[in-house]
Amino acid sequence: MTQPAELIITNARALTLDPTQPRAAAVAVSSGRIMFVGSADDAESLRGPRTRLIDAAGRTLMPGIIDSHFHLRMGALKLDDIRLDGVASYAALTLVVREYAAAQPQKSWLVGYGLGYTLLPDNATLTRQHLDAMIANRPLIVLAFDFHTAWANTKALQLANILHGGSCEPSNEIVIADDGTASGELREPGAFNRVLALMPKPSEAQSRMLLHQGLAQAARYGITSIHNMDGNMEQMARYAELEERDELTLRISVPYSVAPETLPEQMAAAVAMRAAQTDLVRSRGVKFFMDGVIESCTALMLHDYADNPGNCGAAIFSAEQFTRLATEADRLGLQIAVHAIGDGAVRRTLDGFAHAQRVNGQRDSRHRIEHIEVLHPDDLPRFNALGVIASMQPLHAAISTPGQLWAQRVGPELWGRSFPWQSLRESGAHLVFGSDWPVVTQNPFLGMHAALSRQPWAAGQPRQAQTLETTLVAYTRAAAYAEFQEGVKGQLRAGMFADLALLAGDLEATPIEALKDMTVALTVCGGRIVYEGD
Image (tube, rainbow, N blue to C red; front, side, top):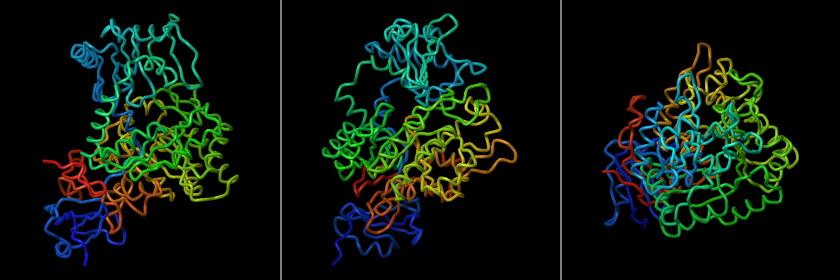
């Protein structure tokens, strides 16, 4: 006799993302797995005296959302700092900084995150003098939303001993003003980490509290899995400890972060992380940063920036260095994920993957390129040919439209090659979506809205907008494939993990503009309810 279900969600409009059974009315759960997907009447036969029955009342039930590009610890630890999302003027920034400083007199350092690049007229950049006018007696540093540029006041630059400049590795810069002192603008982590390194570290208790806040946000958005895009054994152990305490409310994949100074033999650390996997905390790969970002001209382009002749950006790894490290990682059976934004960085990454395949032989490697904000047409078919996954973030395109600094940097000639979601899909590439939190919000419904509502930026350009179905696939089934987990999650199918999201409305009946306001009524991870709305 079949054991009764522990949980049944019935009367749903279930979008299963299972091609063999696209729709259903009920899902039953037992022992952390889906035991049944089908009609409400048949599900009723699985009901026992202790079964929790939830009437979906015609709302959408779907697989738990898988965010394919996430920074959990980095995002969580910033939840207690100055939030600058939506700050669109110097006056607004001044007000937010001063109010925070007044409310937090005990903080010796002030740091803000989420600032846009077009705060001042004519795309002028912030200076230390701008920040000194807000607050001068405490060190202050504010970071751009993409975490590739920061601006510091004079006090912070003095304490970091870089008021008069300093050397940085390639693609990192302490910008010098006409008077020979640091302007306050710091490009890339090699520059601004010299300031951030001086900040007091949060206590262990505070770190855990902030992690719980970040996890709670994810659960509230129906997110049941994340592909973390930074990591090491210490981070992995921290998440495993949360799992042991029964405090980890999603599944997380943690890579080993590779830096330019990493030696091939140090890839053994990634192998050790793979051996240390738990039920919820997985690791099977490495993460590289090939370049920076368009806004600060640190993304590697094949041609000069439209508004900065003579500058095509720079790579963090030389071609030879990346190829050597990638080939070793591939030899060890590791999956490789590479941040590559400019078309030059994407090409260099694809070249390295191709070399690794020639040397080590072809296998189901599922290497990934993250972001791909500009792509040369010659490189479009190489994704499918090499089996490379395109991991992209819909909201990045939404904040890079004409009128923004991003579009000015690349110039109209390259707009048609920018954020080429549909072009990659039609070429046969596997396309997955994520947020890149905390660069943008975790909210997947804002990402879905961006994917569905996107319009060409100029006449004659290809349409890159997605359908609801392809968007959901990119957040579920395809995302599971991207982490070699397509056999256990990403679909509502009997035998798979009971990772579910019950939305607060009918997704298919929701107009595109109203998608931004969609919320989640219930989130289930491994059969456990991790969020339940009012």
